[in-house]
Every structure is written in C-alpha cells, then in structure tokens.
Amino acid sequence: MVLVGCHVSIAGSIDRAVGRALDAGCDTFQIFSRNPRGWKAKDLDPGVAGAFRAAVSSSGIGPAVDHMPYLPNPASPDAGIYEKSVAALAEELRRCAILGIPYLVTHLGHHRGAGTAAGQERVVAAINRAFADAGESDVMLLLENTAGEKNSVGTTVDDLSRIVEGIDAKERVGICFDTCHAFAAGYDLRTEDGVDAVFAELDDAIGLASLRVVHLNDCKGDLGSGLDRHEHIGLGSIGEEGFRHILRHSAVRSLPLICETPVDERRGDAGNIAKVRELAGA
Image 1 (cartoon, rainbow, N blue to C red):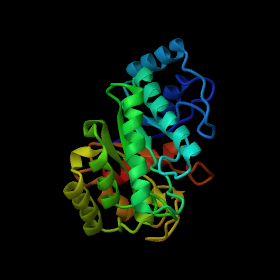
Image 2: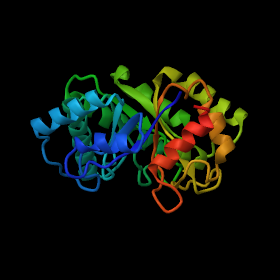
Image 3: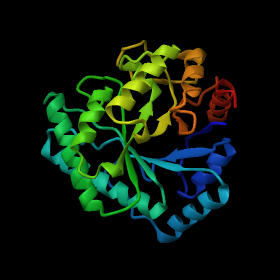
C-alpha cells in the first residue's frame, strides 16, 4: 500500500486543511502554512496551531508536509533578497515546529547569472544561518530538485549532494524528489532502467535514507526540456508506464507521495490519488 496525498488549501484557518485532505482521500498531505505569494506572514495563533495538531492526530493521516513560499531565493546574489530569504526560511522552520510538522520542503532558488557554484555556496550559507536562527527542533528541511530552468540551483543529484556536503547539521536535511522536475532536467523516468539509475545515483551521492518525500507529478514538457509544468499522473510525458516503475521501486514504495497536479475538467486531486493507487497496484 502506498502513502499518497496532495497539496491542500489552508483557506479560512490552517486546521481546515486536514478536513480537506480527508475529503480528497489523502493518506498524507502538504500545505503552505501562510500566503505563498508574499514575504510577510501573520504569527500563528496558538489556538489555531493546537487545533491543527489535534486535527492531524485524530485524522489518522500523515505526515503533514509544509512547503516554503514562492518568493524566497536562497541562491540570490542580491543582498536584500538574500537576507529576506534567510529570515523567511528560519521563520518557516519555527512555524513547522509550532504546528508539529516534521518536513519543510524548499526550492533552492536561482543564482541570477552568478554561476552554479556561487549559487550553491549561497544556499549552503543560507541554510546554516536559518538553522542557527530557528533554534533546535525535530523539523527536517527537504531540498527539492529543480527542473533545470535557466540559472536554477539543485537540478542534478550532484548539485544536491554538493549542497548537503556543506551543511553543518546534516541530520536536519533530507531530499524531496520531484518526478516532473527530474524528468524535465533530463532524468528518464519512463523505463525501469531509468528509474533504477536515478535512485542508484541518489544512493551513491547522498544515501537513500535522505529521501523523505516524493512530489509525484507528471510533466507537460519533453525529457530535458527544463519546463516546470506539472501534468496529471499518467497524462504527461512520463506516462502511466513510467509511474508504474516509479511507484514499484523500493526507494519510493514506503515514502509519503504528494501530488501537486492540476485540478481541471479532466481530473481533480481525488482522481490523481486514485490513479496513483491504481498504478502502484495498491
């Protein structure tokens, strides 16, 4: 049996996300703990945070996963953006601790022409600072692979490995593997050999124990296109056969699987969750 869910809204109150996850048929779920399109966030109300914890506990689903908002760019060479990004990362780590959320997923940003090595150094320093500023907690920061778009940091397994190597508190970081991003970056997930190869590379470079969450998304773009456009499971370039191989791989089988797929006239969240279970043979 696979552990599959989707990203759900916190509209109205963050604790309402749990009911929405249950309604969609989730075993696990992901949220933004705040408005993902702004820099500022209201402090978490202790009563609401307690209601969220209670709702998760009584629901029987989990783990809950939080995702960083869109604006922070920890690879940025711009001092102003960089400082705000470090502060946002530290604050989101604190919010996860208050909410009892064990995993925070972050994109690694864009180096804006400064070069991959410079971007990696900025990301490492940002994470080290954010951990120090946030204080000790059980929250694990998950580094998400990117789709290979221009100036992106964290596209390849080697990129991720170099960043992990530079982080002081390595026990506080893990990996979130996004299937759409990997395919767009040139990892062929359509075949069993291709799926075996990428997880073998990850195991050699970082260790499969670091892999904690999978973002399960099909891809609108072609292999190596660098196009970060998510598609319904099985309806994109990876296809149903590719997802059968992914879902039956031992590295993936027991992990939380989060669909960040479209909601349209073709299929909604519940439909993609059902398709995942079908392809997994669960």
